[in-house]
Length: 175
Image (cartoon, rainbow, N blue to C red; front, side, top):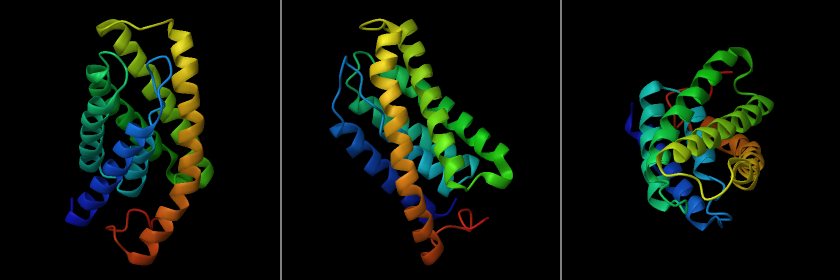
């Protein structure tokens, strides 16, 4: 893991925490914009060490900024599981992993996994402030749409920057 990749992951985590902090909450849950930055970090630096580092940092930062009552522990559980599922699906795609359609689908599935794991963990650890389906509909479904749209817009820009500046160890340039 080189220093340039660590700096990129740190910048993405910083952007994600700002987005997560300013996102308004409804029914004590807010769409998790931090996920989009975690997914972008995984796509740009697809190494297991980087994936786990980004998952742990994202979990901690999201836990610190959550509006969900008792949502700290569910965030710490959710992010590593989501990152590993996302990374596994990313690796399984092989030929199509860098297409914008694949990135959008991966983001939607990753956000779905994250929301489901978070709400399930919260249900068993602290309880939910309302029915599971209502909280899922108000928090997770909008997050799927928002994160997918953000990723479809931001990923090509980030990929272009990486290609032109040769920041990474070649991970993004593999096509």
